[in-house]
Length: 200
Image 1: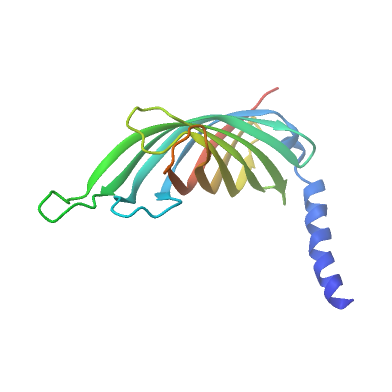
Image 2: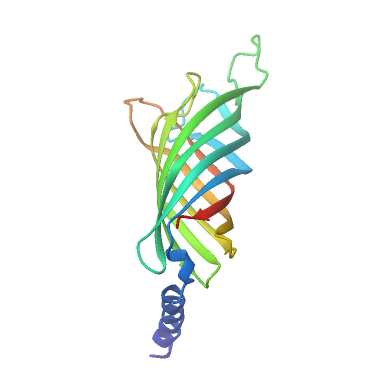
């Protein structure tokens, strides 16, 4: 009985914090975002004998977002992002051929559709789906449906503007839009920062 009480008490406290979230979180908001400061690690679900391997190099993304309240603690967030990625390819070639690593640059357009749960007035968790579209013909990452999960902090000013910071993890192309047999997917971890404005 005591162990059940220890589990129920934190759950009740979290529920109370959700229901007492800031009143101004209930407003519709638009914003601009910038993401970077992390890793973009490509991977294949199956190990291919003789295939090249990949390493994370760098990335950044700019976006616009729209936040629509569902109730006094839950929002729907969507938008569109343009992301520029660089990864390093390590060829698996015979010794008499050039096996030097080289970089690959490509662009992606991401459309996130997430739920954003606000708590303790200044914090939130977010998670949901990610639609990925290749914006360059050289993209090695396949088009598809992915997932996002993150946690963040936010602050609203009296003039209607707000700021937030949102460490996150994205899994790109978990479900493919193509019939590629050996798709290349990507795990992206980074930090998203943004400025929002309340729609009157």
